[in-house]
Length: 180
Image 1: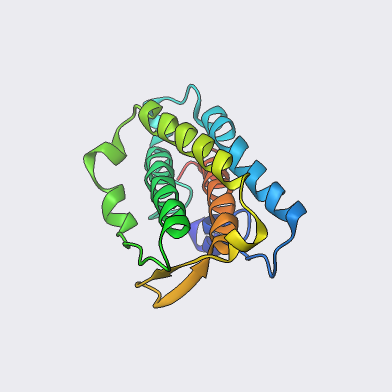
Image 2: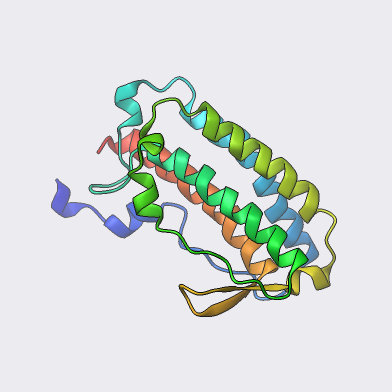
């Protein structure tokens, strides 16, 4: 019954994002590894899904599986750009975007997930290569996000996007389980 559903648990099946309190080399390597394995993990979750299965949502009024996959590609492209800007400019201002509007675009509703999976694979390979070369001081570099009127450092960004990929992959598992 829909009234008995815990929507917050469906929204955040792996929990809400919690940033690292301070630099920890072991934790940074763990987060980089999460970025490294995401493309394969995500591709495995959606391999062989039918058109009908791609329409399953992780919660009522939520995105369907194909929107989730295309969103991860869009979001992680933005991550890659933000990463590079933060490393090459002094506190760059990043461009916000309306992810819900993007999720309604025709290409975000395409059954063919291959181009988005390839984007994720390529972006993650590049990000992992770059992030693996950084020193502790590099992770303190910041960017400004006008939507939140706040600065975020690279350590926060690394944790966010490592969590983000897992978060959406878990939503796909929920969608396949509940079939909303």
